[in-house]
Length: 268
Image (cartoon, rainbow, N blue to C red; front, top):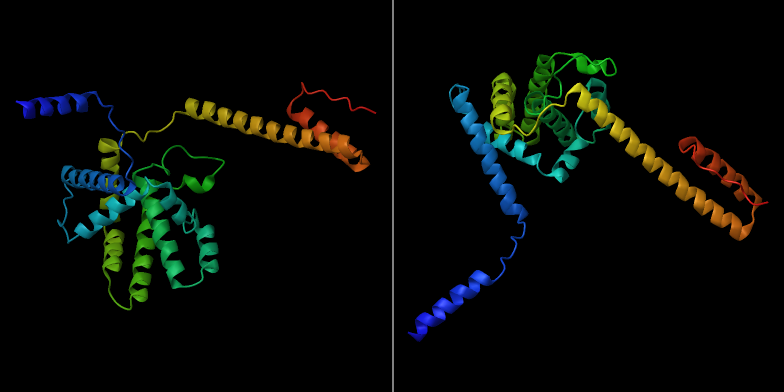
């Protein structure tokens, strides 16, 4: 009887005890998101009629794409790869000229191909109306898909060279190059069915977003100039150096350009 009472007491105490918040386990959470991406990818393949291994063995491509999708959750991973991504042909040539060795060239071609694949399928970066400000973005989406295919092929060749023969990653990249249109179709379906939180902004929303960003940048500039003005003013009052007075007047003039309501009458 006493044992039963003790058990009931402990159970009531556990109910009343506040729950501890789960500490974020980056490794476990990233692994969970990876399996989510892989599961969505496999369902998308079935629903588009492009099931795995239908034309050739490509389960390795599924793993590669799931990791690629999952990497976009980690900002640090994106930052690491950004240095290798070429946004256009001229940029690609500059990166290749600055490359230290074949491993750098391999990373440039592979990362740029990944960027184009994600841009044409998941993020819709190259779709929409022609942009007069950025004419390089006026090419059809198929142009960027073909570029991704070509870059995966070159990256595969570099991977073979670096490994002194055929390697698993070289074969995977070659399959991506060969079946690029199918993989774009699969990922595009996946975007619409499972990643619907990624959506386009309307022209009106973009206009207001741009205006908001401009206002934020303007406010930050005013704050910076005001801080510089006050620092110069305090230093001038402390030292009385003539050069600081001239600098102070320049800061005051610049601050008034940003903020017409600003008034400053320096003491003589």
